[in-house]
Image 1: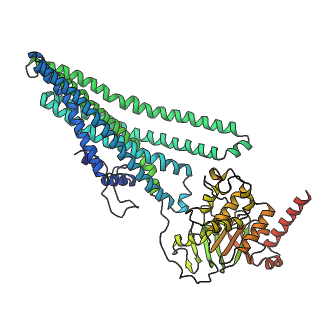
Image 2: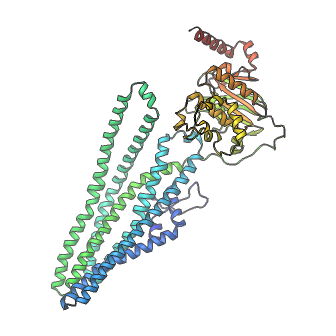
Length: 615
């Protein structure tokens, strides 16, 4: 019975991540995708739910035993002076209390276990959705919101809603039914009197439900913004210090603290002062009414003294259950805000899975062939993106892409690896349109070094071997040599086992970039892409790295995006980007002879270098 109560409290709908339809009710929280997952997890763990339900039923039955034993003690044992019966009844009370303690402890453990299982299922599903979402949508959601929703919101649904609200609702319902049933058995007029108060309480709290939901949504949204503020400030603490902005950030934090206090005060006032006081007040009134009405029944010889004492003991239990149910109703309204947050993760559009792959590669493979055909991609800003871009890269070719900041260089790479899809035109890799290609296959062919290398808080070896860690020692040593990391590692006491710290902050920017280059080379990619990968290197290290890349080009196509013209002077061809369009393309010598933008950029950078040397 309790299991049915628990499961039926959740109604669901078809969710994008499921293949089977599930019935839905119009209630906002219960028709959410998160609720669908909760219901499926409860069904999957039906044995644990059934066990918890049995424990609830046993606890409900035991909870009324002491009151009935008290009635027997007063009505039968004491008037006749039967000490043996009195001792037996007292022992029964003690045994019932001890058994209730044991059952309640196991029940609490089972509820916590089920709630945590629900949280884990939500976190797994939500992370799957986030990790597979289209970057165009994912990048519109701040990372701190993602962290908050994957951790806290999923946890609160399992902990607060399932463990502390949904399953306890079934338990308190059983306790209420048991207490009222016992009161009807003892004296049905007292049972009727108790039942009358329930609709009054429910009506009063129901009117507070919508206000409760709104305040909770505002409060947790405010908490989410505070967490985002902390992540931004702590991650950018160097910028804060160098701009002497500590006092400024302290003022902003104090503003958040005061706003948080006001939001918390309103929420607490509603939940703890208003809603939480309704139950005790009603409980006191019902207890007084039970004694008063019971006295009338005793005077009319319709109720014994023991029956009155038992009914007076059961009435508070009944209304404690009512109070808890009303509090749980408030929690249910509170959790709707968490459902909305988690549902936003499930609403993210997933990246395309599967697709075509090129024909089997020849034994003497020389790298990928790339072709942009009038490719256009627009950002939210009308003037940002790339427009009608066309060029090709032959297998084994070294292509340089240069241009000023914001000219669309990095966007071309995002289109090439399938992070974005062209709005118009097409990008072909080995003859297959990236709209149709298997993105997983494509990315296995690519070694990518981004502008800002992402290192994990792990050893240098783990970062280079990411993600599988399966590369052999010989391959690792070759990647280290090609990335010019030998001398750097020789200076480290722990060598490859050195921990680089969060985001690689314990090493320099140039060292981070060289580690990222080694990681890309270790994949033995057919297509090697460097996006400003030499921006943080000194001239000597960059020269050595260019020489190493030139020697390791066999069997792969190389695309280098850079603002340093010298970096791509050894390229077979160069594409010059300007305002999202191809302005020039050709070999370095051809572009220098043409005297266009490339030549002017080369002269400007040569002049800057000469000024630097003279200074």
